Structures are given as C-alpha cells and as structure tokens.
Length: 247
Image 1 (cartoon, helix red, strand yellow):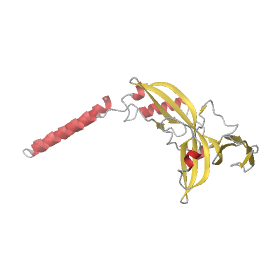
Image 2 (cartoon, helix red, strand yellow; image 1 turned 90 degrees about the vertical axis):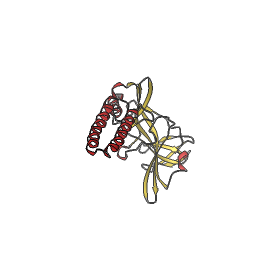
Image 3 (cartoon, helix red, strand yellow; image 1 turned 120 degrees about the horizontal axis):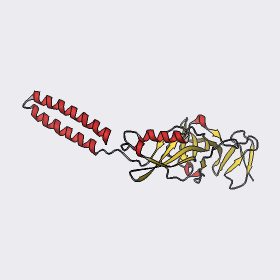
Image 4 (cartoon, helix red, strand yellow; image 1 turned 45 degrees about the vertical axis):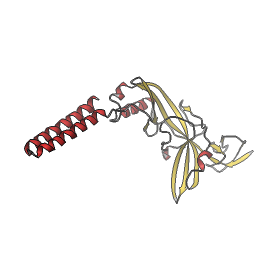
C-alpha cells in the first residue's frame, strides 16, 4: 500500500497502486492521485439552469457577427448538462502566483482550453456534493502530460470538475454546437453561422468611388461637390442601416 498526506487535513491516507481517487477517512475529502503527486478533487456548482443556458445562447446568437435571425431561427436539439474535468495548476512564477487550466479529458468541444475557474466557487468533491443529474465526463489525460511545459514551481495541483451546458442546434440545414460556461455564462463556439460581409463591402466600395468622383467635381465646382458629398454620406449611412437590418 502507498501512502500520501491529505492536502486538506494532512492525515495519512493509504491507497493501492493504480488508484486514481481515494477518500480521506478523517475529513472525507476526495483526493485525486496522480504519478506526479496528490491534489484536491474539486467541483463547481451550476449557476445556470437549462432555461438560463438556452437564454444565454439566444443572446449570443443575436450578436452583430452572427447570421441574421440566428437567435430566432436556430432549431435547438440536444441540450446536455455536464461536468467536464480540468486540471488546475497554481504555480509560483518569479514570485507571482499564476493559475493555469488544462483539459483533463479528451474533447473536441470548443472553448474548453479557455475556461477560467472562479476561486470562490470551488467546492471539495465529496459524498455530500450534489451533481444534480449532470453527466460526469471521466478524465483520460494524465496530469504528467502537462507538467514538463508548466512555468515556475508548483504550489498546488488539482482536478476540477467544471460545469458546462452543451447545446446542439441547426441553422440553414447545417448542424452546430456551442458550449455555455455554467459558472460565468460565457459562450464558446469554434464554428457558427456568421453574418455575410459582401453587402457591407459593396456599400463601402460604392461610397469610396462616389467620393473620388466628387473630388474631381470639386476641382471645377466646389459647391456642387459639397452637395454631392452630403448626399453620398446620407446614402452610405442609409445603405449600411438597411444592410444591418435586412441581411
């Protein structure tokens, strides 16, 4: 039997070789065992319900860079509540603490390299923690995979189960997926239906050509050129507004 000290209460904890998780018999903390050492085993409670997550997606879909009416016309499919595992490394780098987050599970989901763990929301994962029906994604990437590339010296290393909602949706006959961070309401998407830029570019080019022509007119009749420029400014603004509302 191997033995470690509980990171919470410092009590001796014995475990068999190959064990990944062990429970401290003194304080009931769950401890993650890795070849690089032992660390706390945390989870973060969900702050967003399913309805909140869908509402967050709708607001994101209504953004100016998204396809016209994406928020209205996106057909939502599967919505999954998940706890995704990440490693939290606290490192001393030149006298300053840095927190680095890396995925502990293999995934193609977007944004999971950009998660930010809110320190005040970390809860030690033990028998009293309620997952409330969320799918627990199992870690399958060893912590040692990251250790050689980390800066500074170690202060703490932990396995944290992070709350996310994954939302599948269809738009224009194509399938897409987003991840909603259930602690900060941030939305991640690697691919999404984007608003086309062709119409905006056409307005800009036509406006530019009109101003060039009016510059030539100004060499012969300044008053007429100023009138034409005023008309062009109004036309460009009106065209841009039309494109923003209709395309």
